[in-house]
Amino acid sequence: DTGVSQDPRHKITKRGQNVTFRCDPISEHNRLYWYRQTLGQGPEFLTYFQNEAQLEKSRLLSDRFSAERPKGSFSTLEIQRTEQGDSAMYLCASSLSLAGGTDTQYFGPGTRLTVL
Amino acid sequence: QKEVEQDPGPLSVPEGAIVSLNCTYSNSAFQYFMWYRQYSRKGPELLMYTYSSGNKEDGRFTAQVDKSSKYISLFIRDSQPSDSATYLCALGSSGTYKYIFGTGTRLKVLA
Image (tube, rainbow over all chains, first blue to last red; front, side, top):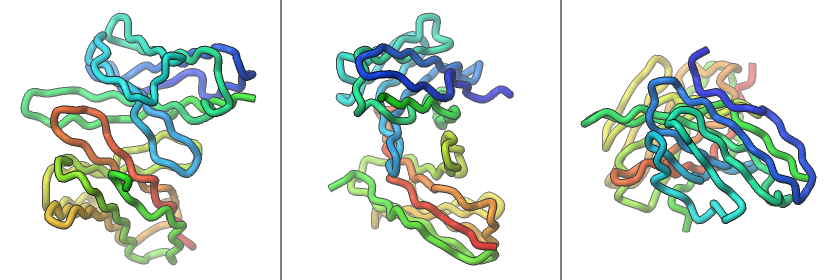
């Protein structure tokens, strides 16, 4: 399967713990995105990378959240001191930017986080 | 006012019906219009991508964009029980690569 993969698929943690999620994009894609989705809502943008550079961050991304894409391939999203309000599905997407072309985002299966 | 409005449903139709799903938006800067399908506890799957106004057809799916009315639609012909899912509209504009999503419409196709 050459789609976007995410690990773990499910994470249950206690309030105050740190968690880290991993995303592996489609191999030739140079852009990578993180979104958060809560029940009954559409995905909300968190941040995006072009290669290894983090170019845009949402105000939803508080200082407890940090994302990296160290070699322009996989990315990690870390949440420190988790709160119950962080419980959500965290989605990763990737796209290939082409000069004069479209930039369609393909999503992974998501990581479902439950904070107790 | 939200940037993108979408009726959450649920919308129940009999098998074989034509389904119409819609979103309205307020920001005229949106130029890219996508429809995603999301099954329960799965990631969104891209169905249709359109740029600017007009129609696009792919199999049983037709996407329409009316920028003058700030209104986009997805039509599903000959709906099947396997089409039962949540359908999300997503909009993008040049200068930023983030998508703005609607809340999604839950569709149930009854056999």
